[in-house]
Length: 376
Image (cartoon, rainbow, N blue to C red; front, side, top):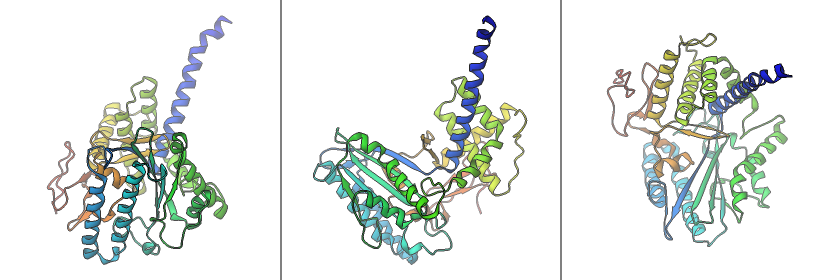
């Protein structure tokens, strides 16, 4: 009996290590290929709704409307953008009415993929024609008078599955674009907090009914399995995450850097890039952490976020301005990520992500340890 008791701590430690390993693999897999989920709180002073940086939401949507007119002049193929920006401005006015308690305390918005691009063969103006995502948004008035905004991407913009969401509330949308066809209901705080998950479940169950199999946010499990298999080969990153977890050293900042490294490796693997970093054998921790720091710095420079069902990881340098948060929630012109010189975000020849100011070029990579030339 004494001998059995003596071995218990070791058994417990092995169990904790196993659990930490499974958690790490699962989280990395979701972060690599997860559906984007965002949530942030908005203030209301009795007249105007403001974002976290104190900027009025009306100001952001009015600017987006003006920018849309310019974008169409430069690219007539995006002629639908002014229409969509106007609908988003109307949405923000309804949010103000909600804040004033003039309408129900929850508004559900289905920002579906533009029908004009359904048959496009390549990405146009920032729209991904392969995934054809819908941005599902929920705006909810909290008891303290603030507005909580939730948003989640649903792949495919499957019309039948989207209409199933309306049917859940006894509504039948009109033919055509869904963006302006909003659902208004009164809900408790508890109902508000799980609403995005509830709506995602409705969408996925409809996809199953139509096509069979299992779905998550409009994606088949096979999409996730591919990333899961990849993560399982990255022993050094997984083991380092486990080590940090068991030593209570895995901070959000470190997890962000680890996720950035995993994402960078995954992107390289899809492009056939072979890395010299060891995967199967015990790694050189100094070399590994150098790679992790570089990947994290590059992701922060670009303002990358990593989202999974457990939440969203952001770098300390992430742009939390009202305009950026609204863009993350699906508002505004996607073509704004380009200008007359091309994409604002790009990579140097060493694979580091860079983001330049609009209307300006930069001479060298902004990752401090690189400084490689990026001029033409």
